[in-house]
Structure formats: structure tokens, C-alpha cells
Image (cartoon, rainbow, N blue to C red):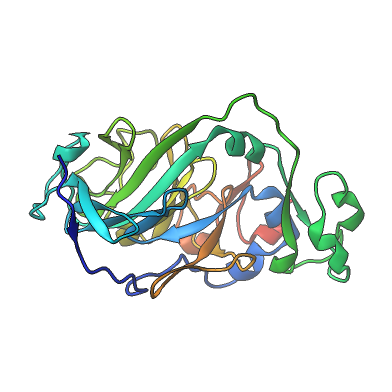
Length: 309
């Protein structure tokens, strides 16, 4: 039986920072080749608060516990320690333990939206025709800009083929950045089970690869796209790490993510969540961030992406 109680909560932008870009990669990001071939993901960047838009419930990571907060501001602990005890334990969500929660995301996996995302076509619209802003998959070819380079970010648009499925299936999860344990955790809200999905809890490091070998070092905030790919700011390693659906971890080069200016902020009290866009093919394979090493269509391009063919 859960105990409900009132806690005063004010959501603020303190310590909330979205991924930044620097140097010449600001220009590289907006080059035509990057936009059309970079496999874009766009999502909101989350600190330790997230909202279920369907139920209007909030989920808050606070003092090593996960709180569920209803519309009357009543809260109950659904995972972690009621006393704030730090530790690590997977399994039943009520008895699971965390160590310094830095980010929480509510994610409802919608198979219809996921399948629709697979049909996405990223296009660049003409700058001088406002009518083209409402194009769809059936008529977008009439509005294509085939010349501009760099690209105006407001003219980048995603169009989708219609996709019909017989039945929609939903699965509800919370994703948690467990910073003190150097790992990423998941709570299945229907089964009430906590498990680790990336990193080795209790071990810091910097390593890509499959689950069981990949490592993080004090990750903090994150975002998740409609397919379920997770993007994590690996704070002590100074990179954005990408966790794919098969729990493989890649490192994106510095500058692969930036604010997505096409979307408005989401406001929670004094906190404005910002939209982030990442180029999923800007994968770091070796060298330092300044090396600009990028994998583009399986051809390794060094120097700037402008040199890639």
C-alpha cells in the first residue's frame, strides 16, 4: 500500500543545460550532406523530471527515489529508498536502489509511431515559398530546395508516408540516469521491474559496445527519440553517448547535437524543456573530439564533413 503525501515542488532551470556544439562543426551541422544523410533524431532534453501527457502525472527523481506526482500534487514513491539511501539494486521497483538520480524520462512506446518513423524522409524546403511549410509526403517534391548550403534550420522538415497497423500496442517505461552508479536504468511501469540497460553499475569508464561491456562516467541528463534510442550526456567523459534499441552504445562526436529551433519549449513551472536534434551518423570512432572523425554512409571521412563525398 502506497502512502500519499504532499511535497512542495517547483521545477526550475537550475543546472539544466542542453548539449552544445563548438568550433567549425556549427557550420558542418547545417550542411546539406549532414542534414540529408545524418539520420536525424529530435526529442526533448530532460533533467530529473518528466511528464506523462496522457495522465498528467509527473515523475521526479529526488534524493535517490522516484516519485509519481498526480494533478493534486500528491506524491508516492514508486522506486528507490524512502529515506534517501544510496545504493544499487535491480529487480522489484519498490526495493530498487539508486545513487544520485540526474535524469528521469517517461516513455510510452507506441508501435504505430515507431513504424511511422521508419518511413520518415528529411527534406529541405525552399526559403521563398511559405506555402511549402505545410507539405506532406504526397507533394513535398514540389517544394524542395536543391541549392542552399548551409541550410536554414527552420526549413528542415520531416515528412512521413502513411502507415496503417491493425492494432496499437503501448509499453510504459521510465528511464533513469543513475549518475553515482555510472549507469542507465529502466523501470517497466506495468511489470514494476527495474533493470540496468547500459553501463556497468558501480564501475566508471569510457567504452562503447554491447551491454555488459560499455561504460559511462557520471552521466547526467538525457533524451529519447520516438523509436526509443537514448542520448545521454556522459558528463565526466565530455561526450554524448547514444544507446540503440539493442542496447549497443556509440559515442557521437562533439557537436553532433544542438537545440532544435523548429520546436517550442515545454514549460513546467520555471523549467523550460528544450528540444534537441542529433545526427545519429556522426559517430566517433577514434581520436580526440577536435579530429572531426565522422562515419558517413560507411565511408570514414576525416577533417570536416564538408570534405565527405
